[in-house]
Length: 98
Image (tube, rainbow, N blue to C red; front, top):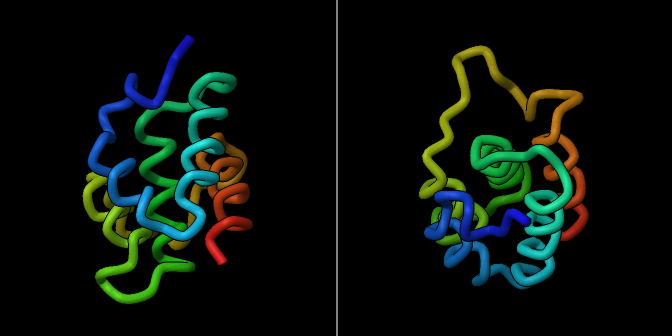
């Protein structure tokens, strides 16, 4: 069984834990890591667009988690890639981000 530790995103977990719904967000991510084919790239992409859409200042936990994830979208990207695992993670996290 895969766990959050299997993904090389430990700095993201520390930053995300500071969010008021951080524990719930980590549970959503852990669920997808265990039960879907998601990888670190899917999680990082979901976190990036979540921070883009719902993050506040540079000190916002979502923005800090996104910054340490290492994900950078391509020049033409405007949102999470539709139809993939990253989109499923994003949609579930968006419910918790507000």
